[in-house]
Image (cartoon, rainbow over all chains, first blue to last red):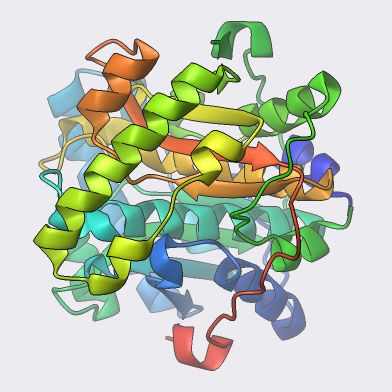
Length: 189
Length: 189
């Protein structure tokens, strides 16, 4: 699939069919993640592939717990009806886990390491694009407590769970999401 | 260009020819950035296009200042010979600027907003891939002090400069950078 088409067409999908994902497709998606750039080419990521129904239920329970908390913290009423059922529906979830010790020179800066997170986000974007090119829908889900996700997925304390990528064949139409135009977002110096 | 080819082939380029970039190509690259996903589709980015030689010199001076400091802070001797001349050479630099007020629900979490940074990283990755598909080389440069970059580029204090993307026709060969294989990076649950 053409790169520019994939970039323009890829959308967040919230309803998945229960059709499984071929291992070959999953490998191509994961490999796309590996080719992301990273500070000093440190490749600060690990990918955990989750297919277990029990794990997915626990991830959904954590998302719901977090939402409940956030409704109060944010005052955003619409959030109360937000459903993350795609965490249970998706045949495969890839957890993207970052390693702060594999960041760039920013390890020595005041803000602390963030380059490793940016690299993991680039890897995530590669995987979303790859999934779309293979006819799969995806959600980039980040609304969870890192400590809880560490417990559920048995991630050591020194690593950071950054995203859950839900993958599957879309069930029904995936709504397009508009973007603001270049004239609103670009400044020339 | 095929998506998977672009993902696999795109490399960091450190030497640019002085051939200018067509506005049409630049627009396609910037538009690719706009299509990145973001929390609540908040589109928390702004792109500053820098062509002025004076600005580029100031960015290079800041990179060199930062490197000098980092050589001491890190104890990494190789860093002393690292040259960021591509900041002056590249015909175009795109500064990616994030807006922490356009993050997701993570605004209310203890770690503070980071989703907006991840979205900006996804936009950056889209632009790097788009540049490659158009025959352009690119560097994702992040080694600077945010305060200094705000001063040079006149960015308000509430916005965060996250990356400088240097773009141009590669001068000479761009060396491939290997990646670790799936077996090292993927765990199945």
